[in-house]
Amino acid sequence: MQHELWRAWGGAPTTAMLRWRGPAHRIQVQRRHMLLQERIGTSLRLPSENDEAQDPEGADAVYEAAVAVLKEHTRDISQHPMVHHENASYGFRRNTLGLRPFGILASLTGLGAALVAAVAVPGDIAAFLVAAFIDLLLLLFWWGTVTQAWVRRAAEAYADALLRSLERPAQDVDSSTGH
Image 1 (cartoon, rainbow, N blue to C red):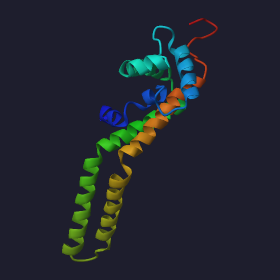
Image 2 (image 1 turned 90 degrees about the vertical axis):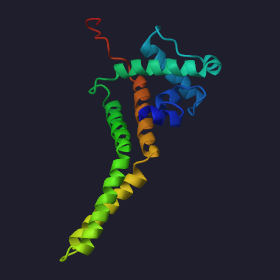
Image 3 (image 1 turned 180 degrees about the vertical axis):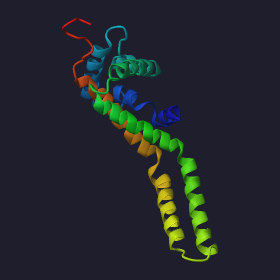
Image 4 (image 1 turned 45 degrees about the vertical axis):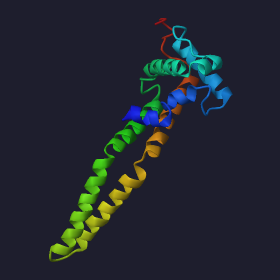
């Protein structure tokens, strides 16, 4: 599902935020490139604006590789709590979108059953109408809230948190031991 979303969005949000041709301001992209290059070292060279213009797909591949390295540098939750939080939020929303058809079907089934029971079962219909109302609210959630746009907002928040982690100095080396 994730790759389908990224394809619809024109690439992973982190990739888009690193592109010279992307929506970010040129100075912001330049700073991200400088900080990311410092973090990943010299084994992988980030593309210049000209490199990216000549080979956009190749540039995206380099951005994806650099982001993979950055993800490894931000795995420590105590050092990068916001990255972890935004990643969890994105994962929850992405997975919820994957369950959307089942959620809609379950809500419709529950709504239909509650309405039929309200009419067919003698006695107090209030409980069935409450159940129908709850199922209606769930249907509205699955239909109106759980959308690609909802997931994209979380994906972009995660990408932003991941790239903002570059603003913090790398703490991978213990200065007392050199390791």
